[in-house]
Image 1 (spheres, rainbow over the protein chains, first blue to last red):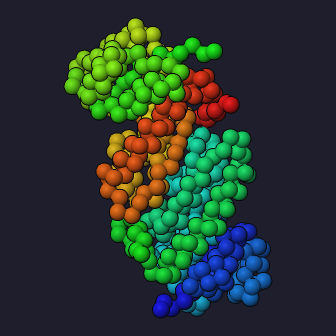
Image 2 (image 1 turned 90 degrees about the vertical axis):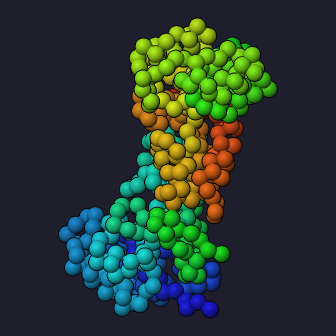
Image 3 (image 1 turned 90 degrees about the horizontal axis):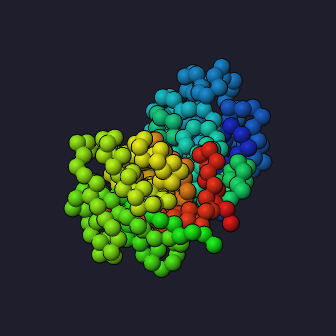
Length: 206
Length: 206
């Protein structure tokens, strides 16, 4: 029915969300496959995870910045994704702000997982922000990426309660467990062409 | 064991949260009683609800402002609450920002219910804000009141999912239903002296 989706994954670190996506593809939950994994860190474990499964993996090159890529390097990243003919770019712990080259090349086809119920706690270490703010409920958001930081149209969200005695670590672990379920689920819906964006709202068709 | 809590309720409208609090007192769920109900609108139904139960109810007088009270009128409000010897002030749909006279007179003893998972969607019509932002999860927050708008330490929160086809009205109804459970529960914990504020965090002791 649907052409299998070719997924490019971008990550900066451990890659546990990438692992969850690759597993969901292997099990046939996502009608697609991860065809390339790219990282802005040469020694990121996410690259090992991909190679272990025989999936092409590459370091995209050294950046002079910490929170973004210079336009030339991001253009290089775009070429790598286009060569792998990906139909979706999944940000799995990618710690840089996505800029125009990538946004234009893959408009409406970049999604991110964020460890809070956006619009609460955008940016870094959202689970620590949530604890410090004293909220009783936080969660996970999967959203399309736009030019803002964690501001794009929301695909799925799930609440995670904060429990008495929670530490940043224990809370982060429970949030991670939800990410590993919610991110593949959002990609499954995208792959099945079941997401409709209208303005800020994303409707899931049946 | 505990002296029954005397509760003053402030509201501007229908008063369904006030009703839920009065019921929880009647059923003995809250170890206390509503001893006065005050409104900034002479014809607010919340006053009818109180009178129907034989609880003193009063219009606090005409304000020249829409979103706050002038200091003299708020001081009058404080006197009415003090005359009723209340130990807790519950804001149940009170549509004005609380200012210094009330905050000082009842420091740490004013709580509010808000129809979103704060810090998302403070201010007015939070359920509409949530729908327009396209979130998939919103909720209810009960919090202590400080000088900000919906920024005080959070006592309880509960998530409310946004469902396909939700309108502002259907969502608001489901949020209301949660408010009617969560607000009395927070007051029950306050009345039992089980809330400990430290900085922004509120711990519930067992």
